Image (cartoon, rainbow, N blue to C red; front, side):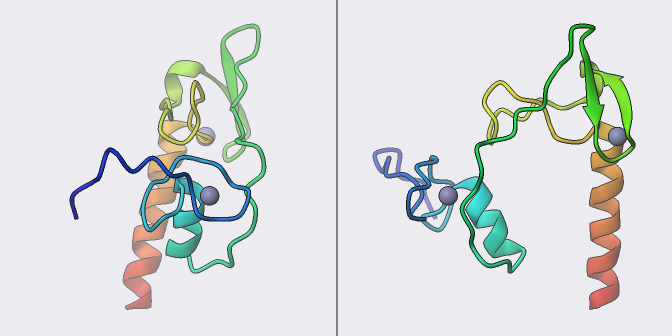
Length: 104
Ligand SMILES: [Zn+2]
Ligand SMILES: [Zn+2]
């Protein structure tokens, strides 16, 4: 489906106001749909914080890693970094892939 750049209406979830991503919903809400979760209001976007030493905490491996270990996640979090470090993201993606495979 071609994207319509003139259609700048935000997410259709009440009071969400985030930019629309797909199916009339923002990134957060469309991923809830994909995960078959009930839609709930998204909190304020979490911006992964870089500390004074340029280190970012990864909640998955519980380590402080340099910001270089995090992919910047500009689509969903302007100016922010990915929630998890790149190796953890890869691990999580792999786990998800395997569980999807197992479910088939
Ligand atoms: Zn939304
Ligand atoms: Zn990590």
